[in-house]
Image 1 (tube, rainbow, N blue to C red):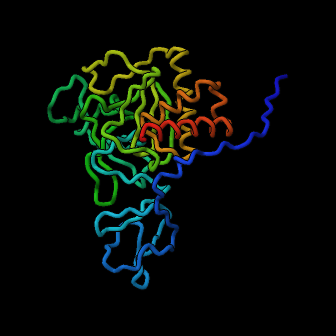
Image 2 (tube, one colour; image 1 turned 60 degrees about the vertical axis):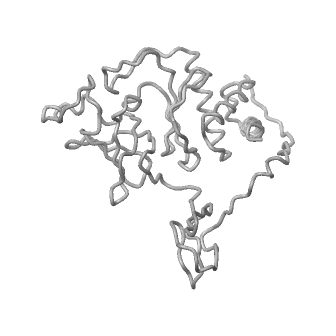
Image 3 (cartoon, rainbow, N blue to C red; image 1 turned 90 degrees about the vertical axis):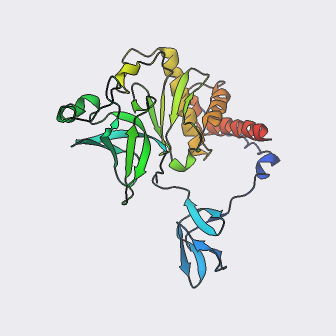
Length: 293
């Protein structure tokens, strides 16, 4: 019977270049941020005896005279234009309810989706009756935040062909604060898989698709068997994402690819071992620093 034995090893020293990064101003609840009365109070702060005090644990952000505290761990607070990955939880009249890791369920209106065939027309009662043919409970979708309601709920849309129903793949859940904001959150990685980095902390990994059927309007999903090599790449990427999230490294296409390349010398299952995780994340940070430098 094979036994997996792990011996203790000395912790590698992080190079001095890591400490050269500008330190963030982190605060805990109750910490005084400033006593200057010339600043405006933003999210995550309150006034206590003319002192601006933090109400959450996080990083202090300052924009001109406005000071706010961005929490390190929080539910997703969506903004217009954010890319999200969500799961349909309920089919209602002229709308779907979608779980997007926010405080309230998001709303996807029937008028905010593409109809199969790409035709542009007003939605009829017949469309309303066939809503479950497009999306039903449990389906995963990618969408964009169209607007934010007064109570904080999000209104989504999938009018672009890059959004819509998701097919075969793996969903990884991380903290929304770890996903870096970029111009695009859809990436075809050179390793043979694609990734959708949702701003809400839901990351979708799937085999890179071939020709896309534009007539499906975002509702077509391929159910063909996924090859073993694609499944191995996706499994390794999933373990790399968990390693980066455990060590609080920002997730974007470059950091994920560097981590994937650093893990190639280890078996897929070994990537989740604490010492291997630390080794590949350290190498990833080093390469990111060299790229910035």
